Length: 308
Image (cartoon, rainbow, N blue to C red; front, side, top):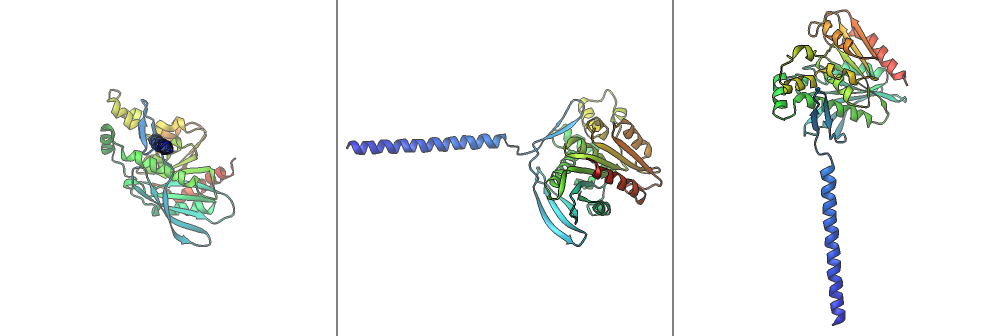
C-alpha cells in the first residue's frame, strides 16, 4: 500500500514538473516574440526627420534570367515588411575581384528594365547592382501621402524608402560584394529617395543624384502651417537629411537646360550640403542619365572603388 502511494506521489510530482516546464516555455515563447520586430515602425521627429525601426532581415526569391561570359542577371522578388513584393533586377559582373554594390532607383514612370543601361555601365567597372521597380514606379502623390500621414497610416513614399533600404541590405548579404563599398544612385524622384536612404542606412557610403534636387520646404511651407503639415513635408524633403550625410559623399549630376527639374534647384541642394560633395553640370536638356554624364560618373565610381 505504501509503495502504491509513493508511486502515485512521484507521478503527481512528475506531472507537476512537466506542466511547469510547459508553462515556462509558453512564457518564454511569448516574451521572445513580443520583443521581436514583426513590422516596421515609422517615426518622424519634431524637426521632420524620418526614422524606421523594426526592419526584418532581408527576404527574397531569386530567378536567374541571363548567364553569359560577362555577367549574370537575376530577377529578385524582395518581400517587404508590409507584405508587398518588390520586383528588381540584380546584375553581377563576372570577375575575380571583389565587387562594389549599387542600388539603382529609376525616376518616375521608369521601370527596373529602364535602369539597365546604367547597370551595364556599372558592371563594366566592377559594380554589382540591384535596380528596383519602385512602388507606383516612383510617381509621388503628395496630397494622398499627406492624408495617409495625417490619419496615422504609412505614406507610400515612406514605403519607397523602406524598399531602398532593403535593397541595400540585399547587396550586403551577397557573396563577392564588399559590404563596405555600397552606394545608391537615383534619377529624378529616385534621386530624392536615394539621398534620404543614404542618410538613413549606415552602410551606404555614397549617394549619386542624377537630375534631382530637394524641395526647399523651408521656403515653401508657411511658418504658420500646422505642425503635422510641416513635419510631413520636411520628412520627404532630401534637403532635411543633408546634415546627416557626411562623411558620406554626395554627388549631383545635372544638365544645364533640364526642363523638368531646373538646374537652379539642384544648385540650392548642393549649396546646402556639407563636404564631401561634388557637382557635375553637363550640356543639354536631358532629364535623367545621359551619355554626357558617363565620363564624370565613371570617374566618381572608380574613385570610390579605389578609396579605402
